[in-house]
Structures are given as C-alpha cells and as structure tokens.
Image (cartoon, helix red, strand yellow):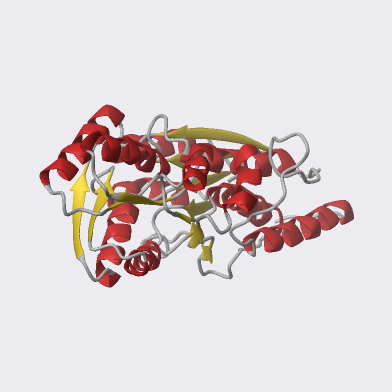
Length: 332
C-alpha cells in the first residue's frame, strides 16, 4: 500500500476525527447542514474508488433511505463512486454481490441478514481481494465469515431492552410482528424481547412486501384475541401500518417499534406509537462506506476488529423534539 501524501494524511486525520465523533453520537445524532441534504464535511483528494453497497431492503421501506443517505454523504466526502443495490430475497442479494465482484469494485458494504446464503458471495469477494464492511444485519455471523468490520447493534440485546421497557409500560400480552421470516436480525429481536418480557409473548409472521396484507393480518389477530395489549413492530413502516390495524380492529393495543423514519417521528409525537428503538441507520450507512475508504487509503480498521455498536437507544416523547429536527433533514 502506498503511503498518502501530506495533504491526504491531513484529510485522513480529519476523517478519523469525524468517524470518532459520529460513532459516539447519542440518540439525537449530528446536526444536518443548512441545505438539508445530510451532514456536511470536507472532501478527500484521494484517488477515486468504487464501492458497492448491497442490502436486503424491501421495496418502499423508508428505513433504508436513511442508510443510503448516510452512505452517499460518506461517498461524496471520500471521492467514492457508490453503487447501491438491494433485494430482500437472499439468493438475489447474493447474485447482486457477485455482479459487484465481477465489475471489480474496490470495496463492498454488505448486510448479512441470511448469513448462510451470503457466505459463498462473501468468500468470492475475499478471494478477489475485495475488502468488506458489514452493517445492520449479521451481528452474530460477520466475524466467523472473516469480515473485518461491522456497524450495527446486537439485536438480542436490543430485543431484551424492548422486553424490559414493555414490562415498565405495563404490557401483559404482546405480539411481535416479523415482516421477513428467516432474517436473523428480526428473529433475534423477538427472541430477545421474549427473554425479558414477563407477560404473554407471541410472534406473528407477515409479508412485509404487501402492506395491505400486513394491515389485515395484524387486525385479524387483534380481533381474534382482545387480550392483546401491545404490538411490537420491527420496522417503522410495519409500526405505522399496525396503527391502522389497531384502529380497524377497535383494539386498545398500543404500538411499539424498532427503527424510525420521518413519519414514525410524527407518530411518536402524536402518541399513536409509544416509542422506537433507534440503531442510527444514517450512521451505519456512513460508517460502512467511510470505513472502507479509510481501510483502502490508510489501512485503518474501525473498532479494532470488534463491532462498532450504533444502538440501541430509545426515542419517545421525552426526546422526540430533538430527533424531529434531524428527521426533517432526512438523516434520522
């Protein structure tokens, strides 16, 4: 690896300071720039590189807009061409990774929601000498797969925190809604919540790519069992749909969720959703790209070989006003 010139060293030092600052962000995040297009920063004069980001995002899931915004902001700062693609089906996601490998990208940022299905593609990238950062999904698998960096939350711990909070809120019978069966990060959230929740806890599988079906499935469950007093969603779009389901069913159940988007912030403000567990998706996207730039230009590994945790933290009525400012800018 060539050593950077003095100007590049200065840029790298500034970037490292920025990464350190961002990684220490609380649930209120960093201040967006005045243009409303993300968090402003300088730009690198390092050679232009290409990084592919491949995720398991479902069409229309606005959570991933936050991740993509963070990734693009880092790419713009770092003189990186960002190629983003996604597919919720594991075989298709693996094919997207292979396509990126075949196009000879300089780095890969991946989600590992289905580690077994992704393992051959990850191995193929490693054989081609392409560095990988993992983020958002795959907390329990990334290390064993030989990936050097991970940005996200321990989903089991996040689930346990949700279970404890549900206890504090007085819930007695909760349904945890899984919108994509088989994705380990979603399964881990429900499993963690079940470990700490003291009441009746069950899971409900829905098709997260079909919101009318999600609405009717949750509503039918609530009508079938009036004792349900809590719906725990695993994503903001599901939570917002669950609010409709509660109304359609005439149920007294309250809605709680993981993850946020701008509309979810409004729902917490008006009380239709009680709280959200935030894992800072903008930060995950940003660090997934910025870490690869640092690695390729200076051999840095963020986290020293361990995971960089971006959550969990709670967003509720006590801090929603602070978060709303950044949600409007598209970064929370």
